[in-house]
Amino acid sequence: MKNILAPSILSADFKILGEQLKLTEEAGAEYIHFDVMDGMFVPSISFGMPVLASIKGATTQTLDVHLMVTEPIRYVEEFVKAGADIVTVHYEACEDLQATIDKIHAAGAKVGISIKPKTPVDVLLPYLDQAEMFLIMSVEPGFGGQAFIPESLERISELRNLLNEKGLTTDIEVDGGIYHKNVAEVLAAGANVMVSGSGVFKGDIKDNTAKFMEILNGN
Ligand code: DX5
Ligand code: ZN
Image 1 (cartoon, helix red, strand yellow):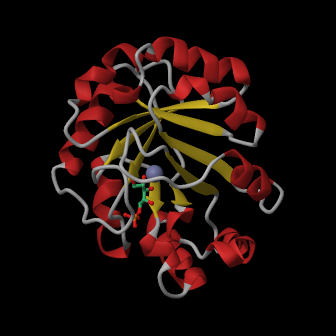
Image 2 (cartoon, protein in one colour):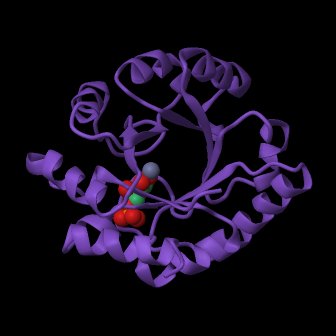
């Protein structure tokens, strides 16, 4: 498993988004994390397909789309068409998670399954071999800039152990409150894909990204 940084553009400056993406790409961030919020599954509203489509033309980074949307199955095909490489849906938001997983795969994208901080990790058991990535939320989804919930570390280890027992090396992504100061412990707990919004886009984007990459590459 490769350690990857996924800058969350929720904290970017949208009037110069293309330039900011370039800075993260040049400094080694392989993914761009794209947070879609519908005002129902989470209180806030962010952005959708047209924004994703224009990002697709502005970077070669993997587009990691996090759908914080009720019944995301309704939008899977449109997000894949707009450029999503990975489509992550919430366990809590899907009436038929199996059908949602199948639809994402059929559309040609990788599947991510996410759980909120209070959802037990073992709800994922029936799906362990069906996703390319699991996303453990380390804050309540909905807003950038919140503090990392410390219990998330145990949840990451629990999931990594469950995957190991099945001989799976699936990616574990973690999202919310990740900064230079705590990314090493998130990595040590067993995650390998780190989302960071404020930690990348607040301050010097290139330096912030490079410092994350040093830690993720073990330097
Ligand atoms: C929260 C979003 C996150 C958010 C993370 O609901 O899913 O991706 O952008 O932001 P930070 O890194 O600032 O906590
Ligand atoms: Zn996210």
